[in-house]
Image (cartoon, rainbow, N blue to C red; front, side):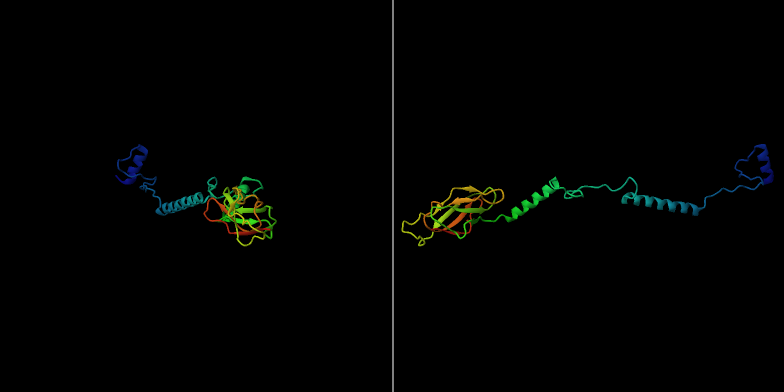
Length: 208
């Protein structure tokens, strides 16, 4: 039996020989439709391009809703003006002040005398100030320089120290009035503070 006859019998009689191919209305075997390899490659290429573009947008933050999070790391301050009296300005000001104070602290006491020139009548206090580490306890000591007493003996007692006083939080002592009991003469005066074995540089002062 020829193939066209078999196709007609199968179509009108509902028969389909096992293993026989499907035929069209002309009796020609149907060919299986195959997807062109080029179409598969084309679709796969653009799928890969789309996935790569989406990943790039996600990690660069251009994808809506997936922007990079802002982290406030240590040492960073929020932008915008800092108002006077705010915590940021206060902290920066106090830090700068503390830094300046720490760099200004001398390694040994610094003694200054208010009276210029350094001479006062005997029985009068001179005014001294000491710069050193805050909260240090200091004393002043005077030593008579022999041969400079303008009056007759006795030779002034030496050395003589003042009562202890403290250095303030700003690194300076309050004004220290001292020397009322000094006899007429010229003296070397030094400051000695705890926290160092060194005395201040010598100040020469004369009571007439």
